[in-house]
Image (cartoon, rainbow, N blue to C red; front, side, top):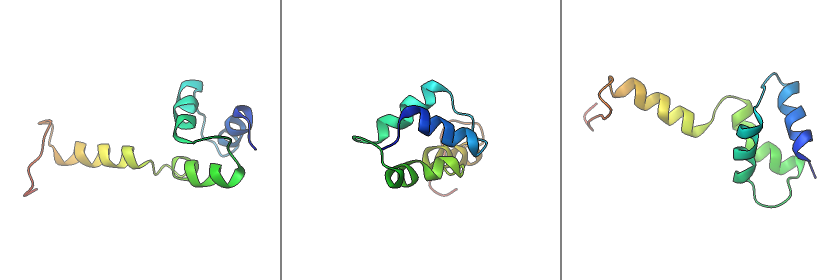
Length: 74
């Protein structure tokens, strides 16, 4: 199983510097001890820069044209 420092080092090695607070938030997504398989499944998208929440937020930001909302027809 991986320790917090193992996970931090993994992000560092792939050039993704992660703040302690961000790491703690990511660890909340995992339940129980983290195996290497679970790490890859849970955090793979974050390492690749494909965080679903970020993708949705960025898409909304483009579509809302600064209004704070968007309509279905857009």
